[in-house]
Image (cartoon, rainbow over all chains, first blue to last red; front, side, top):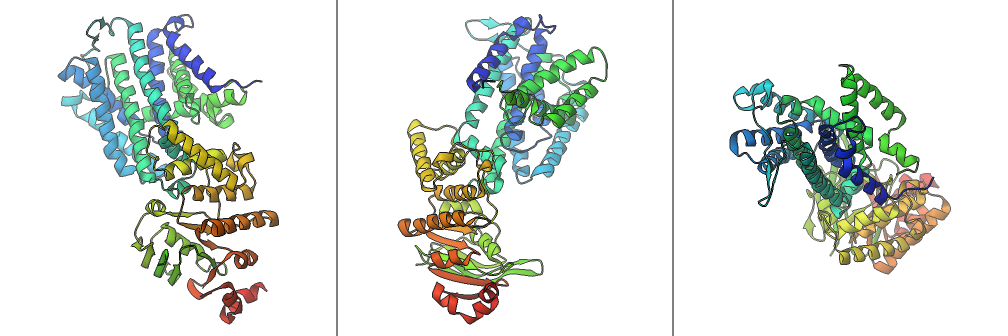
Length: 316
Length: 249
């Protein structure tokens, strides 16, 4: 079979994303489901910046996802009723936390790094869970709604018009994904690949490995907290489950399911995850066991993920 | 003035003294070979010079500056490049990509989020020069992990050269190579030394290679210096013969 060039593949993905709200109903979905795919896809792709392209496994990315969500929710509820400001505050909160925690853990490798990221994640989970007076505890931050987008000339109703909100999320997604793509193609991005491929060689080429892992961690967390803010805005609500360890695990599952060595793989993984969750959970409460089974099969037989299968068939 | 000076470097691992008060000084443009039986502490000594770990005691000077406690990547920045006994490359990237990373880091672009067209053109040019020097041009776009062992070793040396080092450290460059590959790599090292006056310190087991290339030889045994001198002096040294060459003969 003839190999389809990467540009064509990328074009198809953008085309599908641009038209998704218009065919989602026809295939049994709905616009909010499409938005969920985008938001969780962005989270999985952000995680994969670190996992697939730096070779560092974080099992605590929900912490920054959740910090973004809480930052956005609490900004609108307590500070200013502005969607862009909520996003800015959420992203800043998640990124700042990542800068501090990243500095502590950048020396760790492998299982130790993963374990400590879980531990830090759970710290934030328990703060959100226990600090009732501020975070609303188990009930989460409720009683607020995403605000209309005021562009000066026109006001876009993000709340009532779910297609408008989809395209707003798509715009944020496009900016984040383009930035990540450019970074990965830059000299800096190549030093991350170097670290993934052979840390010792990278070091002896003069790359300060710890500093670059820190940078990669912070960039990855910055984009995952952006996804977190959008997640809160999507449901007009956030609760401690957004930053619990099983959410972190879901991001890893999405990335591995889709294919962590490819840029778009995690988006595909997220789409499969979200759709499967939506479809199976309407039939049985044990939807997670189906996703688990599917995940095990993919990992066993197609270690490069779903996109890896397509690649091998020459379709991508 | 010497480019590299090691003063009484000692490295202990628990109760084991792997390197025992070794001193050595290498002049600019010199090709120094370090030989010694297995377990003599040669690679540990290399690790001290290149900053893989610090010495337990002693000092290391590089072009006059004390680098004893400096990190490996800082030493690379000062002009020290090394290869490893077991080839260390980026196996899932092509030869060209391997070299590109090295060239970009050496050009000071490691943290750059973009690449200007002119800088990119210069980088491409430099990559081509390196590919040509190592005879790797026909294999430039193959994954380096798929190449024969000899080509992988050459690629690693080319990556070290991409850093434009003032001192090149080669840990057993001909290890595991056939006769033809050994000959090719020996010629390459010879050209680097003769034509570019590059200062090289190498560890080597193949005595033909050592006596063919080296200006001076340092013999290590059980972590200590057993002798040092020109190849002729070393060949005549009775202690060295007894400890090392005698066994080989």
